[in-house]
Image (cartoon, rainbow, N blue to C red; front, side):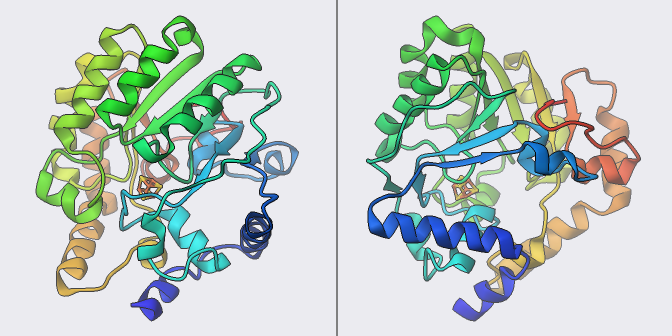
Length: 305
Ligand code: SF4
């Protein structure tokens, strides 16, 4: 298993590995600083803006590990390469950093929380603190999650007076529960995510959906139709990236699933999907699709469009 995962994680850059290793060292020493990644000057030099940098100028996290255990998780692959975890199982434990410094500056654009874990009952209190502190500093906060209804009822209750500065983006990668259970074994069901979306929308929050990675590309048009009445901001659609580097492929079933995903996100299929959805005003295409259909890449970090 370890060899398979190791082979899967070779795509992480040396710089990322060094940063993760340093974080791990500080964590062990009890002086761990909250994970803040700022997409500033260095990123302006880059030709292409990809991943979470399309959405936010800064990324905030407050714990390590995630019980959702998604097979394609980039955060887990980074943690493995850095030595922060020794196996995929280690990642399932959510380790909250109780000592984090929760004072944040006002960033120059939208801030994303979290990016390398999810908001679950184990870290809900600290997550509420982090969101509250970010808002207090004047930030616009993009909260991204495979939402637990219990957690988001609490988040909506807590921040009902500050909803103008919050954008919820709920990751809903498929409707088929069999597919979800395979790829995201610990995450909430489709029904629960949709209920959380509906609840936040009905309470007046700004709502968005991320269908990235598409786990059932043939159903994306119907998935969009199923959720769009509860979305007032955007629906992002994107491919599964770096499959050969990140995905745990440890069985025949896993290989079949990987093959299916690869087939379903061929250029031909992506173009067909684009033609079916491009007139929908809510749809925004991630960089993985922009480059296939010939749309311009994002020109600035954090534009979220
Ligand atoms: S929810 Fe996000 S952080 Fe958690 S395992 Fe899945 S991809 Fe990783």
